[in-house]
Amino acid sequence: MPYVTSIERAGIRKGKAEGHQEGTISVILPLLKRRFGELEPELEQGINALSLKQLEELSEALLDFSNVAEVGAWLAERKT
Image (cartoon, rainbow, N blue to C red):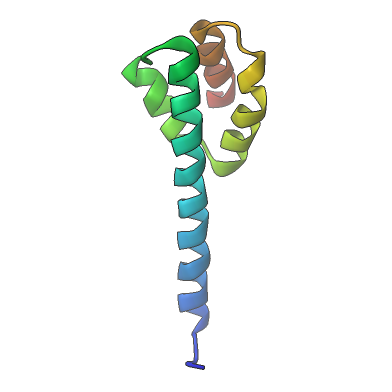
């Protein structure tokens, strides 16, 4: 087994986290689009800017939204 330096291990961890974040986004956006139709670009950008923890919170809140304005309000609360 080859030696892996601490810097390489950190890079591997970061890559896995980024992959998980991208995967979560690739699930959330289609669900929101299916429920509310096409999303405003600003809303998509706001979702793409969320941390992994925030994305996980959003994935739990998805079923509570009754309209796209509530999604925007949820995002606005997280920006502050």
